[in-house]
Length: 396
Length: 107
Image 1 (cartoon, rainbow over the protein chains, first blue to last red):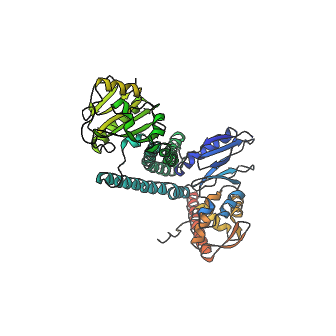
Image 2: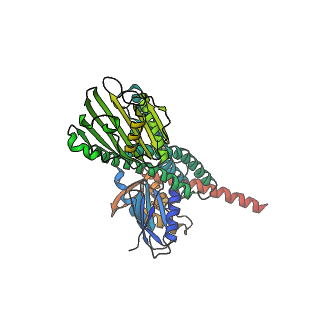
Image 3: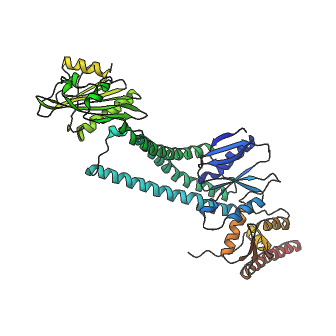
């Protein structure tokens, strides 16, 4: 059987707009089959020309302590068959009989119900949620400022799909909440005016669906955030951290990473390696680190390479890395104060006299650094070393 | 918080109470009102349900039985008293109108 999918993006305060939408669908020959997850509306072809819908503000029977079965029986007796539920909206379709009387015929009573079941809960609920979000944000900000717990780095947020989805989801939710509160009050005022003047209540189909869509999008993004959070828990297991250099290092030499060879260190002196894959929808790459033991002492070499979805995003990542390196440090190397340096790339920054380089060419970002435990470090901007690093990173 | 007592009845309220001078269920009330008023007054199922809930809470009606998910109601003594008070008010209004019309005719 042919079916059609529609998005039921209406909140309780827009139940009249929802009713109009369903009746337009009915006039076009589509009958509502069911609503899934409060938002996906399945329609099937309807052969009826007399089909009408009525939306009433009632929750599902099992959400009430009271027995509501007689309500649905009464509606059925009166010619309205219960079809579907979406949140606090019960959707009824007219039976194939003479046109039934609408479910609500007393406008004053309907106005009171509208306030009690749609507007007041929406405003109070949204205010509460906004307050909760604000309190959580303040707590998180205070904990970050006091240095309690592990600080969340901006570059980690940019390299994590879960974090980005979560941030976008929260943003959508906040926008939806801030929009719904004045919209609810305006709705209420429009209702009262319409009842006083005995006029039909005006509904704005587009804005109702748009506002509902913003809130629904926020919820969807939060759900995706949780899913991606679970996925990202397993990504570190795809990397390696250990002393079996001989088994793992040759494979890594095939990647575009600057390693001991490029930084003037004997590769046979490498005793420990660590590779962490970076994978998100907007950034992919690798964070690589190796320890080498030479006569001069222990040398620590790092190379992080990222490929971003766009130049702008790559530039944002560079800015984030610069900011956090200067405030909270990079790895165990301490604070890195990057200053601009001209190396012929889109962006080039240098710290500690050239021993750390932060580079960007197009949508590729690389952070390369070397540190000798007993002091001193190579200048990676020297001609020979720079050419070797540049060739390995494959930035151009 | 005490529920506000009904001072005057709206037209749907009046006819619902009037219908419950005999035991009826919800749809029976709707049909009776439509027949009684010749279709002039129609009470929707949602409106009726809310009215019955309110009347039951205010002890103007009482539930007598439930059959096949249909609740049957009947007027209580208090409901009968409220209905009669409303009837008297309407009757006095009608009498006042008739008197005014007679006086105008006599002029």
